[in-house]
Amino acid sequence: MDYQSLLDNIFDEVNKKKERGKVADYIPELAKIAPHKFGMAFVDETGRLYTCGDAKEQFSIQSISKVLTLSLAFSILGDDLWQRVGVEPSGDPFNHLSLLEQEQGKPRNPLINAGAIVIADILVSHFENPKETLLDFVRKIANDSSISFDESVAISEKETGFRNYAAAYLIKSFGNLENDVDTVLDFYFHQCALRMSCEQLAKVFFIYANRGKCLQNNPYLNVQQVKRINALMLTCGFYDEAGEFAFEVGLPGKSGVGGGIVALLPEQFCIATWSPGLNEKGNSRLGMVALEKLTTKTGLSIF
Ligand code: DON
Image (cartoon, rainbow, N blue to C red):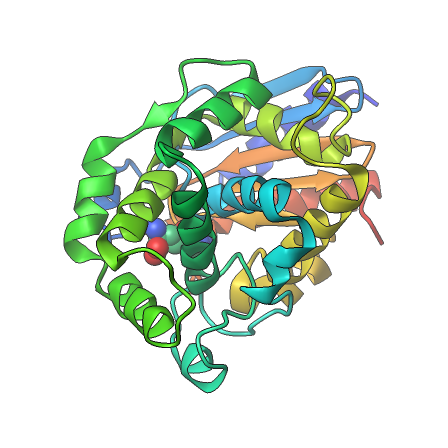
């Protein structure tokens, strides 16, 4: 298949759209991003890269980072991880607290904010310098040492992330947080503030499309663990829009409020899109439209 023409055609069709959603502004630093940006990067089953638009420009990956921290925690704890966090979709927005109270501090899944905060706690407990460990992990998979945190985004969220403080204190009150709230959230705000381009994201997430084989002697994830992470992306990666994403696109994936989406078809491809305007569920509007076109035009989806 001519993936470059496919990508270029989708880009041209989607980029004409006037209704591009609303840039996230609850993290003030994110509100500064130009809403017209749009890029896509695609990696085929051989690892070959195709790009279009602003695919090389870095942005804040936000919740997409939750898949990466989940992977690290899973590689350390194995299935014991599921004693601290569940594997069911929440059907709620990413920052909701009510289920956490009802279910006594065990978050429904690792991809909502509460679940990612528990994962952050595990990494803070286990590693002497968890931020460096996370950077090493991502840089190694991407084979790119330039990937870093955007300190201004991390600070901006630290000053305004009141719902995350509320979630962390609630989790702590139920005994499911080992470290102090400030330390855990400092790590969490930094993971969300990872700056990456579509190109870098597609290369990193190729590890999930390729079932971990692309990393020689993969010390992190075995095939079964990749299967479980992909299942979580499918059922929980888009919060209360996970059903809609499966219905429209039909791929495991993950979004972030910086406007990025990654999605993949096991053994076939991985794609990253970036358009900062979000729909009312907090997922990139143009990204979802582009991915629907990709799977509909090619017939390539898990269904
Ligand atoms: O914790 C937050 O609210 C943000 N740092 C991340 C939220 C996010 O990206 C939700 N995804 N669509």
